[in-house]
Length: 217
Image (cartoon, rainbow, N blue to C red; front, side, top):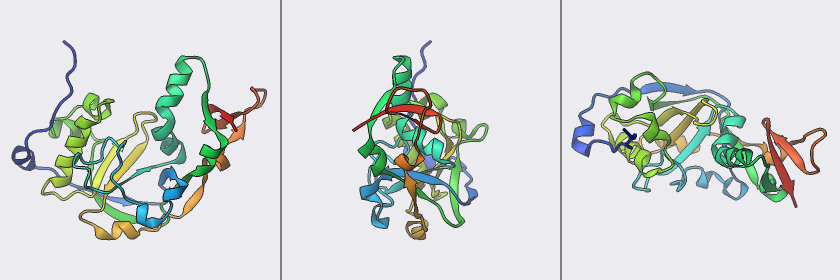
């Protein structure tokens, strides 16, 4: 029997599920990779169209964080790199793109109340499974994110695993903890700064966190 993606229970039913928040201290440094034009703190949280754990209403500003730079990079480029690898090719990017992708990093510890999707039974408790969490059809996980956002437990976000590296990631919503928007997150270099040439490779081949790309322009 083929696996079917799941939809969350209706709001009234979901809100009756007894869920407990994990009090998580986000210690330095977690990372967010974004376009440099959105470096200003006023753009820190936004309703990401690509994010699978952006609540479905698209009215909740979010930020995605990863526990290390490699995972943050993989969350944006992992699918493209995998597709290139299946073709026995290099993923092609421009130097300008690498220069305009910058990292923000958490600078000081702060506390959040999150739903922990990394523990045994946590997906089952909300009638979800990992196929639904990681599906290419993000409408399904976004509805679960909306239910968790609206749950009486008042979560600040979700702790989950990267589908590329299995390292920890966070999606945070500023709804219930308003000072999240003012948490210091200075710049910590660009993708170009993190790149290095691969010895003996084709001209223009760079390594980023052990993944190779062909850089042009």
